[in-house]
Image (tube, one colour):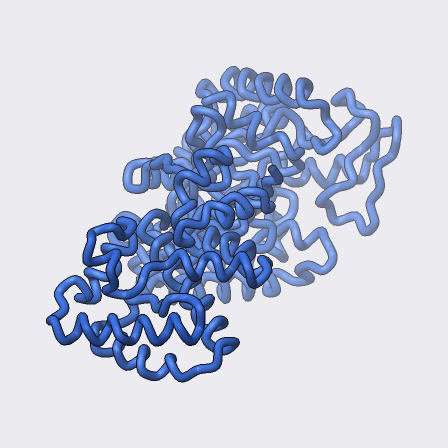
Length: 471
């Protein structure tokens, strides 16, 4: 059994109403990453200097050496950039979420005191601002535990949010397994929060951003001037606000760094963007923890049966009747590379149809002949499957006059004699009159044309049946 773990569907077309407080059309959430003093540095016990997210073009790690220029750029963020941003956001009464690297916070008591006095949320940004992709799982688990411990010691409160950033494939699962966090943000895959299941843990995920993010001042392609960044933020805001006006409120994350946007030539554009959004009365600027608490209250997770996680026996028992009396279709679908995208009616329908379509004509003919005659002898004797009985009744085929019943019987016989399988139509698309009209029209087709049409109708019937069972 092959399973594809990546979720390529998300909410799909079923976007929930966020129900932001006050009927807000958009939640705009500002994150300030505090990494200064937690970056790679031989003073911190690291093997080399930092090379990530600075104003040094083509920066490289210096093994075994301090990089004085790199250190001083990070120090600018702590010494000047942070305070410039602190003034801006406190004056505008917009609360921030701090992604605080625990070791950086421990080296910045004045800044931590200012964060707390402002009432900002201080989430955890890990123990150190270093790469985790090659870190053994046990080592990363220990680092997460130590980050929580040190963060609590330095700030006086345990973190409720988590974002590693330079994470491994294990990071989100390991953070969730602590049971500590109201949300985790190490994803970039949606405009709304969503839930993930890790064992017995229902973990809220609040996706973050790498594009509405000042880090692109230090990457290529990226922002050259502050206005590049500000223009992009305005365009993103206007698009998302318009979607909110249309009834689909979203969330906009904005990522900031003290040593980047904290420079005077860059922060001016951020000020103009804040002017722009504060011209709207129906925009909510919360912390990430406020978003998490709102989502948990208004959109609590509900576990449900997921086809991609079912054993083969249960899967076939559950979906073996979707294609009439044809368990082999379900069995074949279970053997495909299923994943979260197949846990919806549309997704599972695609998997079942793939098996049906790839079968030879003899097997597909077996599916066609498994279908009962419309309003035929099985219906009269009450021997239809529950699905077929409900479908025929929904089109009024259980309430035929004697004359109508005689007509259906005659047409059924003529059709089967000519084509070798029953007349099949997705009755939920029709009423009694349109079914009769289709019968009259299709009975004259050649067998090849009608075989193809009957197969299409079988797939259509399957789609309706799945929508009764899955979202």
